[in-house]
Image (cartoon, rainbow, N blue to C red):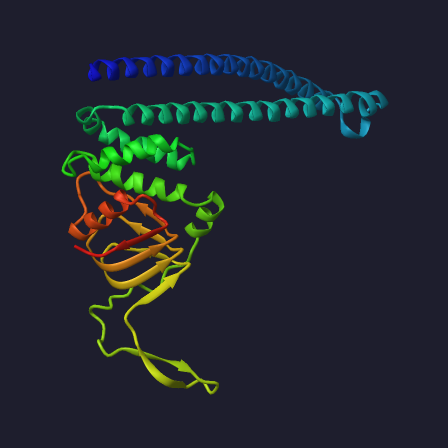
Length: 310
């Protein structure tokens, strides 16, 4: 009975999607026909203007231009050219609007496809993982907002899916990145994307066990008691995790990129960071990369995340 209801729901959603897309494409088709008509009219005007100008240029010398040509014909020709240019500009605006309309249709269709995926049974969801990755990437690129219930359902279904399934890791990377971008204002996302590189993530487990710090005195020299260093933190910078060994490191308001390469990570904290992950379908991340991804995928929110290590 549950499978029957699910099939009926999917059929209804698909029918609504098809009807909505068909209506919008019909409107776009009408717009394109209007554009073609305007282009034909503009081409005819330009052709006539070229003939008129060629005739004037071949029969009248500039110094012998009569009063009527100088004060009537030339201004009229200039006005006609100006009108044609205005029509071309208007046409460009219309074409730009059509392109935006196409992008809007694609975005709405992808949002509906994500909602459909969120309602699929487990086996069908697993089979759609390669397409799911591309769909999430599109809504992320276009900065589209998907209903929280859909995102939560996709998150739970991914958590329950076998990680060895085809397309799992690329889909997980895209969902992590998309959820991370939703956790902060768009203006803040743009700011973080332009951060300079971090000095480098710390590896306190491999550092000198006797490392200590002192307060700098007025003369610029260390003074007072030494404080044992157990952690190092950075903020407002960008880090690429691939190939890094990290432990005892805190990162605040950082751009954190990871492409599934070699990684060793222990006792690392992320606060208000933007995660941008992208994995190759044929190359799953190594154990610590998987653990990091699993931790982020399972997190209820990504503003404060601690990765303890395997």
